[in-house]
Image (cartoon, rainbow, N blue to C red):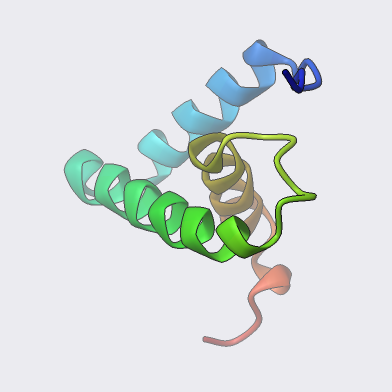
Length: 76
């Protein structure tokens, strides 16, 4: 059995709270996180090397980075 590396759960919680507080609609941001996680899960299914973090956690980290650092996504 492959062990997942540990992560800082307080940082995950803080980032999730930032996403929820920054969104105008809590339901919509939750659905967006779920959709991104689902999309990433199917993308990562082919790449078996990169299973260090669950897709939902990765989606939360990515989306909170996009929220706090808009230069990552540019002018979309």
